[in-house]
Image (cartoon, each protein chain N blue to C red):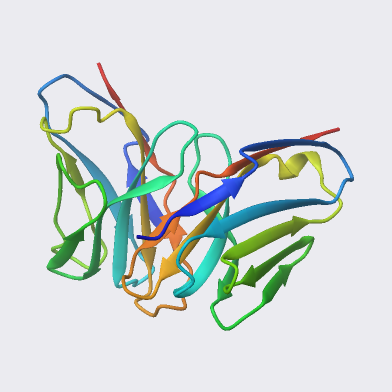
Length: 113
Length: 112
């Protein structure tokens, strides 16, 4: 089955901890994205990567970090510097062409205790 | 900076009714516009993708239109069913970046 997987589905973090959210795709897509969604709101872009070993900040990158060492993987680390990390996190991917559909994973819900 | 607005924020209709969801954007220089469906606690599922050169796309009971000059898109749902209940989001991909800007969504409830 081709698609995007995210793990874990639910994640709990204590104050001051860093946590890493996993995103893997087997669609052979070049571009990958991380979004944050708060209740009743749309998606806001955290980071995106259009090619391996390269990534750019989105609109709300502060307190987050990413890496893109492999084409199929784009992990997101939520650091202790992110003051309000409780949210639903969505990973997406797309072939590089501008005309292509963006595909989404099932999401990870992060809660700070 | 691109801004995307969806009105209304919530909509409740009886089963069988035809309905229209609206999406407006501020910068008409776009690559494409995409409509998504999101069920509670789930990821997004792509419904329709309209390229900037197209006026509309159809899939089953869904029809999406695009008017770049006025900065508007509509999603038309024919003969609504309770299974259509979900949040519908539109996303605009601009020409100067690989990223998309999302609206806040319209939450649709179709009553049996």
